[in-house]
Length: 256
Ligand SMILES: Cc1cc2nc3c(=O)[nH]c(=O)nc-3n(C[C@H](O)[C@H](O)[C@H](O)COP(=O)(O)O)c2cc1C
Image (cartoon, helix red, strand yellow):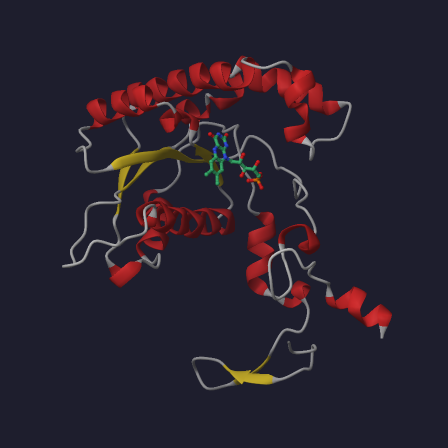
């Protein structure tokens, strides 16, 4: 592993550029950290040009053999469909979060500190928090297919379509963040196959394509702080093989 030496690289114009040596110097990490889930929108309109810039980012997602087994239904004018999605999301939230007592499930929300956790949980149970498709400027129903393909070979690994969709959504989310808009990944609408069927029916989605989320974009009602916190590197990474704890550079240096 390289040890933080300053090197130079050339950019696309051939000019020399300093290679970042700390996370803070990376341009990309700025947007990655600023990106948040936004669930309250003002309802204001977003210029068409901005929405198209966001859609453009989806097109650049990587995919196996560049097949892009993803499709997007961009809903901007159909307020009734936005409300239909909000109703489904609220109903599903009540099922998902109302089914078990706070005492048993509150640990899942470890990243929300007390005393706020109980209040946030109450909002989850009520489901009102998830009605945000109705106030979004744009709701994109993201669809993926695990069986549609344009190659003479069916990929053995399931979920390729969903992986590609995730990458496309991340691209859109980062561009929207840079433009100052908020996004919410409303998977609740498709979590129950009965709801997914209703959505298919309403939007004419063929059986081979699976709606994954109503990805909502809008002007945020208020700014959100960074976070929620993530586990440290040691919580997610292993070193060389499963189970061997990864050690951060900072800790390694201390031991030297
Ligand atoms: C696959 C996936 C499903 C999600 N489902 C929902 C959802 O149904 N409703 C919602 O409001 N947020 C949903 N989220 C957003 C997460 O709750 C959110 O990303 C997480 O709590 C971290 O917060 P942050 O996005 O602000 O960093 C989902 C995110 C992903 C990637």
